[in-house]
Amino acid sequence: MATASAPAAAQRSVRVTLWILLIVYIFNFIDRQIVNILAEPIARDLRLSDTQIGLMTGLAFALFYTALGLPIARYADRPTTNRPRLIAIALATWSAMTALCGVAANFWQLLLARIGVGVGEAGCTPPAHSLISDIVPPERRSSALAFYALGIPIGTLLGMLIGGFLADWVGWRRAFLVVGLPGVALALIVVWLLKDPRQSAPATDAPAAAVPQMSMLAAMGSVMKSPAFVLLLAAGSAAAFLAYGKVTWTTIFFQRTHGLTPGEVGFWFGIVNGGAGIAGTVLGGWLADRYGATNRRHVLTAPAIGMAVAVPIAFLAYQASDWRVALLLLIGPTLLNSLYYGPTYSAAQGLVSLRQRAVASATVLFFQNLIGLGLGPLFFGMLSDMLQPSFGEDSVRYVLYGAAFLGLIPAFFFWRCSLRLNEELDRKG
Image (cartoon, rainbow, N blue to C red; front, side):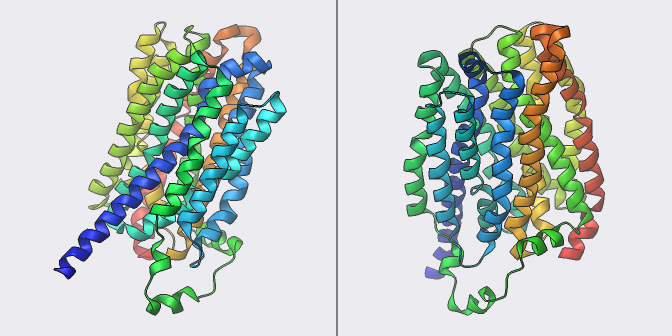
């Protein structure tokens, strides 16, 4: 009876861990993305240009997020590190800094608070990916990482819904306070409920823990020797550049071009973006596990095809004169562009050795967030400022036209990477 109950208890522990990590990641993206729905009222209140909006929503966060992500990931890979405790400290930090955004009196104070959010959030995903990869077998890893990745669309959805509602009801300052402070309490729950399997490993595992750890630069150098991993970085970075840029400026597009309030955009675009994002993330993980089991190149087939198909539909959505038609058309591209998350991180984990998993995740996150989150919103904002003399309030629409067509770039790199997966995964296995 004890033997039969052990696997069931282990499965329950895995489920609890995955659910807690999902909730933490939801808070991560609520605090990260709420600034997008609040950007327009903040800009009016603090008199910001579109370039400053892009800097505030993207680069200020991403620079410190990426700079700290790699050393934190290397620390998470140490056998003696308690990863749940590390995640809890990160959660308390970014939540407190989100609340501080609400008391900023000018652009520079707000920028510093956003930097603090990035510092805290740097300690979340690398240790979470490492933890998930330790407790979930390889054949279920895409689905498990896709489940964790549901925090992106769910957190973005809730950030838009809650942020839009609070912006209309109590203003953008109190909105930051309301969403930031609960995360500090959640950090205590994480410490109490989450356990690191490395901390309870049998004594016979101790010699393995004594193996000298590679330096961070050596670990990164080893990871980057994989041509498939480099192609994966290019694909994921291009996808993130477009995703972060589009979500920021699409929320502003609906307010400027279609005349919706932050609350209306938060509700309608939040439901479309969040619902389609959830469906695409789940579907992407399932397709990767289902078809990757027969031919591992198909782990990345759905993201490659999906992003190519999304291009013309997204263009039509931004061209629509009725905001309801635009929203309906955006369902397809949002779903198709969300297929890549689980497959990308599953492939990244499979292309590296056991003790480089957190660094592999952090390397992908480094490029995705520096190029994607850091430069996407900023580049689109600068481009909008450049186009305003010619197109006025409609400048954002033309920026989004270009963003739609650029979706062919990540589609190409996902396809090229898929061609190398069988060879490199066989070698690594």
